[in-house]
Amino acid sequence: MKDLQVLLIENDIPFELINHDTPIRTAQEGAEYFRINIGQTAPTLILKTDKGYFALIISGDRGHIDFDMVASLLGCNSVKLAKAREIEKVTGCSIGSISMVGHYLPTIIDRRLFQYSDIYGGSGKLTCTLKINPKSLGKLNNIVAILE
Image (cartoon, rainbow, N blue to C red; front, side):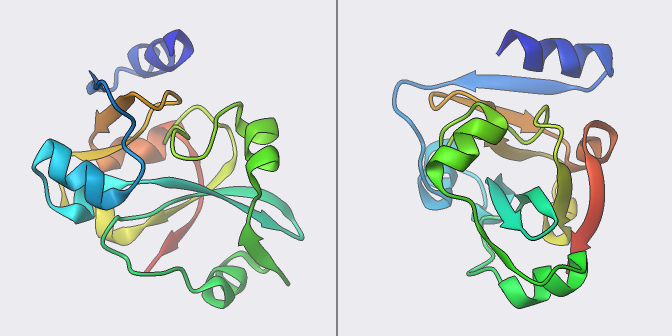
């Protein structure tokens, strides 16, 4: 958590870390807890491809992921969700707490997130949420694609 704060402060990124007593595990839970539009929730998913691992920061209102479209976007033959052990090995985080920044993976961002001034997503800790402007994600991540 301290590393995340240092990264954000060193890059002069406005942010808020919001602690809560219980883990927020779904976009719907996050929207209800923070009283925000579900589209402002921004879970970070880890994808396993034939070209390695990628982070996908997706808007909570996107119903599903079209893996064929993501594969085409990345020029990969196969794309699937990474398994829990792989996620922990690659990010140091468990499913549901993966930080939107600081994972140092090539990243795909959902264009839908840019319609909001603030989005809410993982911080690396299940009981803490990172609130940040979505435009800051480009400064802190290696953006390789935008999901339409």
